[in-house]
Amino acid sequence: MDNTVPLRNFLEISYDELEELNLKAKEKAVTSTPKALEKEYLTYLEKEKRIKAVTLCFTDIEGRFHMLDYDKKFLLASSDNLTFDGSSIRGFTAQSESDLRLNIDWASFMWLPSDLFGPGKVIMFANVLGRDKKQYTSDFRGLLQKYAENLKTKEGITAYAATETEGFLVEGVNAEQAYDEKTGFTLISTGGYYHSLPMDKLRQFIDFCAEAQRAMGFKNEKDHPEVAPSQFEINYSYTDIVRAADQIQLYKLVCRQVAAKMGMTATFLPKPVMGINGSGMHTNFSLAKNGKNIFYDKSGKEGLSKTAWDFVSRLLNHAPEICLVINSSVNAYRRLDPHFEAPNQIKVSPIDRGAMIRIPVGNERTARIEVRSVAPDTNPYLWFYTLLKTGLTGDKLTRDEGKRDRLRFLPSTIYDALRLFKSSDFIGKLLGEENKEKFASFKQLAADRSPKDLGTKVKNSEVTYHHEVTNQALWNAF
Image (tube, rainbow, N blue to C red; front, side, top):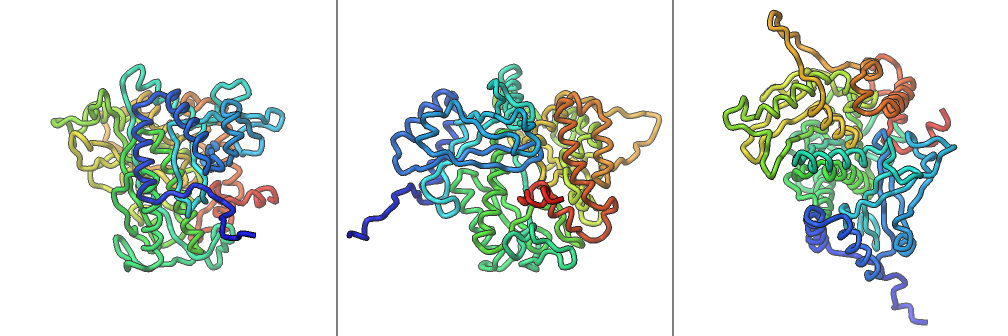
C-alpha cells in the first residue's frame, strides 16, 4: 500500500497570492454587475476541484456573527434556494415561521488564509430573505445594502466608512465564558500606547492578525498596541459602507481565531477591566457624489461643508435615543466614564476627545467626521444603517438663541438608554416598530440579568450574558 499519496488535496494559497486575489476581487465588486460576478464565481467554483466548501456569513439583530458551510457541490446546485432554520437564531423568526433563505452577495467573495480557516474554503456574505424571497425585516445587512444602493441610484451619493476597532488580549482560551468577577481577566501585557517588545505575546498577536487581514484584502494602514495594557488596534482603509461593516465582522473573527491559536482570548467587551481605558470603535464617515467628497469645503468651518455640518447636527440631536444602538451592552456603559477619555459628551469638537463627534484634520480627499462613542460590540450593520438614516433624514438640533448651550451627556446606564430608545417615535420610524420592539426586548433581557448599579467591579452577568460571548447554554439555563 502506497502511503506517500496525500489523502486530501484541498486549496491552500500563499499570503502574497491571497492578497493579490482578494484585492482584484475587491475591484471587480465595484466595476462588475451582480449577475456577472455570480456567473464568474460559479464557474470558478465548478472548475476549482480543490475547494470543498463555501462559508456563508450573516449577522443577527444584536450583532452576533453566524457562519455555516455549504458543501460546494450542493451550493452549485442550489445557490438560488439556500434555506436555514431562523428560529434557532435569537432575534430572527418564531418557531412557527422558522424557514428563512440566504441570498448570496457574490460581490463579497473572498479567499481565506488556510492556516486560520482550514484549507479548501472560500467565504461570502449573505443577506437574509423570508419564505417569500423578500428582504427579511430584521436583517440589517440587507437593509443597509438596499438603502445604500438606493442612495447611489437616486442621488448619486456613496457612503464611505472605516472604523478603529479596539480590543483586549487576555490569558486563556474562552476567557469570557470562564469569567470570574473575583479574579477578573488576566492581562498579557503591561505596555501602553504604541509600546510593546517586538516578539512579546501582544506584538506577535498583532502581527499575525495584520498579516491575515492584509491577505484578505483589507488594505492595512497601521497596527499598534493601544493606551491600555494588553489593548490592540489594527487599522485598514476606507471603503463603501457595506464592505466596511463586513470587514468589522471579519476583523473580530480573525482576532478571535488568532488569539485562540495562541492559547488566549481576544475580547471586544467595551470595558473588560476597571481602572484602565476601555475599547471603542471610532467610526470615520463621509459622503461622496460623483467621486467628490461632499463633506469637504475649504472655506467651511473646520474644512467641512454645510452638508457635513447638517449631518452632524442631526446625529447630535438624536444622540440620546440612538445611544442603545451604539452602546448595546451593560458593559458598554462602563466605558462612558469621563476619567478615561470617554466620549460621553453630546457635542462636536476638533480637539476634545470627550466629545461624541470629533472633526479630524483633513483635506479634499480625507475630510470626514469621527463618531467616537461607538462600542466595539455594536452591530455594525445596524449602526451604519442608523448613522446614515439619522444623518440624512433626522431632525437638526435647534438652539434657543436667548439661552446658553447646556452640555448634554449620553445615558450613563443601559437602563437609561433603554428608556430613551423605547419612548422614541423617531426610532420607530427609523428602524420599524417591529425591530424597535425586538431589539429593545433583547437588550432588556441582558440588562435584567445584571445589577442596576454598575459599581466598581465588572460582574459575571455582564460578561457571560453578553451577546457576543458564544455560550448559548448559559441563556438556556438561566
